[in-house]
Amino acid sequence: MNYRFVSKHLGLLTGVLGASVLLISAMDWYFWSDNTPLEVAGTKALLVTGLLGWLFAVVLLAMGRGAEAYLGRREAMLLVALSWIFGAALSGLPYFLWAFQVMPVGHPFRDFTACYFEAMSGLTTTGATVLSDIHILPTSLLLWRATTHWLGGLGIVVLFVAVLPTLGVGGKKLFNVEAPGPSQPGVKPRIRETARLLWFIYVGMTIVQTVALMCTGMNLFDAICHTFATLATGGFSTKNASAGAYTPAAQIVMIVFMILAGVNFGLYYHILQRQFKRFWRDPEFQLYLGIITVASVIVISSLLGDNLVLTDGTVIEGTVANSTLHGVFQVVSIQTTTGYGTVDSNQWNFVPKMTLLILMFIGGCAGSTGGGIKVVRILVGFKIIVAEIERVFRPNVVRSIKVGNSVIDPNMRQAVLVYILGIVAIFVLGAIAIVLIEQNYGDGIDIVTAVTASAATLHNVGPGFARVGAIENYGWFSSPSLAVMSLLMALGRLEVYALLVLFVPTFWRKP
View (cartoon, rainbow, N blue to C red):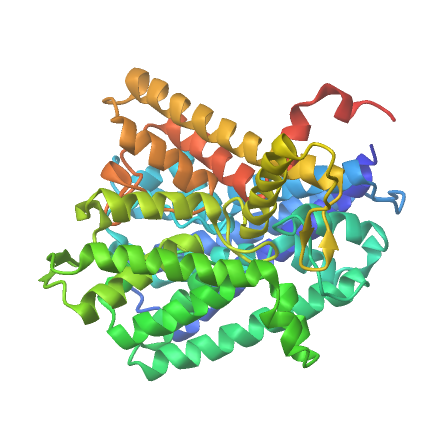
């Protein structure tokens, strides 16, 4: 294991993250700070965190001095895992330092485990929060929360590969471990060019959505924060009522960009190359839109005629227009694992709630910023099931399983089935762990809350049902439960293997 090389590049990544903290602090001080005690404390917390990040970076760089320029697969997986583990610790430090200055004992951020949970939720684009009153946060921390989404959306490690050419061929190994989904089709073979292209698309969409939200009447600060969270399919908002605090026009803009963020970013390369047919004919993209359409019809049909309770507490009639807007918004928000809310889905009946629960597991497309199992794995799994059923009555027929023009080889079939089985197993174990922990360290928990909390964190969705519903939060959980759910978020974001390999003894042995 080339530990020095890992240390060196972890130090560089930590330095970039520290610089990001300092940049956010400077932006807030220049544009939005009003010099109240809460704001000053927030600025100080970010400054201290940024400086500590740089100090930590210097130490890691010194430890990696003279490292051999080689990054194998094991080193790539270790670097990715450590990047998220230490990145979340550094990203959560501003919350803790701020609360230590101005918040009384009992505030969630006085517990560093809760701060770590909030930061991991941001970097993994989960959007689950421990806060019951978001308004009390200073603008500096609100902007930093949104920025953790934006950085984590396409992966701070992908950004790392894009701007640091020293990785060489090892960069491809790093990108393949970090990039969400089983593959990244349709992008350039040179990894740094690929990463730069993805970030070019990402930044361009960020600018467009920010302008679009401002055209709906949203101020610049809120537009930036909600754009960061939307494109990252995160869900952190600057309001307690989430997206429900804004106009229907703003909600429609969010729907459009949530859908775009849930698409494989590699397909956007085809658009840049004017290969529009390849974009529209992509089987995963077609199934993705089909799932959204069918789920929206089911949810809208279930909401018609019922009263809808908005996230700000307002009760409206379930007319065709209201049911369509809020039904589609919730379906898209959960399907893409963004987690924004406009209505209290806890008040819905069984059918729409089960529809949303199923969507939590499916998630967005491979190569998108969304979480979940991914649409392409669902597609491949379904084709495998159909093929196996056919073998029962036609055992001599050998039929290839194809997705588009690509043949799914036996190794990929096995990988897909093992991944789906593994995700289900981790989900069940997560729910059981939460129940046991809350029985011993908390006030107990109902099964719906435990199950949906496990699903919502593992699949990077954010809100679940019952006590973790659309208008609820995770602040009441005990520290051990928050630690477990932080692990679930990291497992879901890194698609399980990059973290689980650290617990395999042979991973640490010399090859």
